[in-house]
Length: 225
Image 1 (cartoon, rainbow, N blue to C red):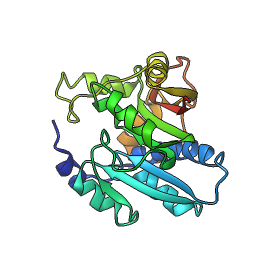
Image 2: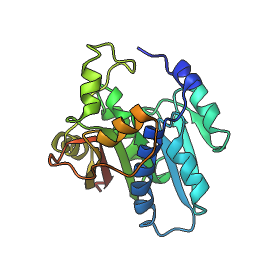
Image 3: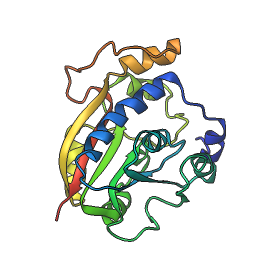
Image 4: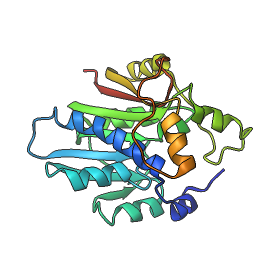
């Protein structure tokens, strides 16, 4: 299993990952646009390299950006552009209740066998009219197949995947009201081709014939009052 500080020291953003970042960015911005405030408090939880929070910082003048990760190496990298970078465990977030208008994460929640402590904390720091956006691996994709052929030697350690149904149930059971669930990159076709050829290109396939057949599933929620 990889050690995260070492991982982020060696990390570079591939063209395939950069394309996924842009797809996530479209969803994040769509929900930021629904928040009618002159300055919106936004945090990326488990920021890693911070590709999405950096992009928000560059593109928008109406957000104050925060980034949180358990890896000091990752946070130091993000602090080059996001001054409010915090080293902390996402299951014990050092912010008071109702701190953020939008909380998002990508590639984080699937690493927990029990997601409840993470969801409890994100709900606590989310404002009552705010949005939580989470991107997680989908159950049926080439990415999942790629993971399985490692025969348990997946470098990122424990990592689960989700369907629409179990993802929605998980959030409902932890006090959230799902607003939207959507998929990104059908069956990983686009991401795999871009990764193999090291290119960025228009999407080969935009819709899956299986509802859960995407590289990632995104769920957007509000707090259930």
